[in-house]
Image 1 (cartoon, rainbow, N blue to C red):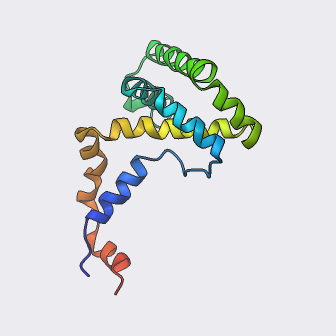
Image 2 (cartoon, rainbow, N blue to C red):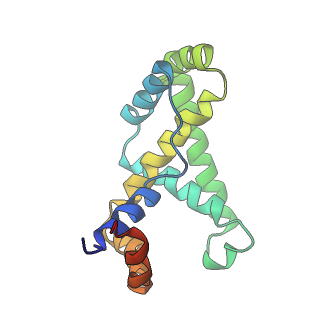
Length: 152
């Protein structure tokens, strides 16, 4: 079987769509994830992705790649704080209470990691982002990968 670069595309998409490994969610955590998904729209997910980007761009080794200002960071933090407050206090409060009761307080982190993954999916669905994410494959040593991944 000849090695196919589509495997790399699948791997890249998997990495790009995930901020972390998915945690095993109990039924109440799954209910919160559905609620978070149902109560956010594309713009809000992009706002969340912007906040994630700006947060990562604060790292000293990444900072030079961003022209974001302190004001950009403050504005993004305010937008995400409003979104978080609305989701926890209004839209999904009953589901969140049930989840914390059954799955523990750490489940709140799991539920919002899910929302972070949705935010990343919102961005990576853009053709320009998808092309940028997969651009590295031009430089992959295909013969080395074939030797490893070809099941012969």
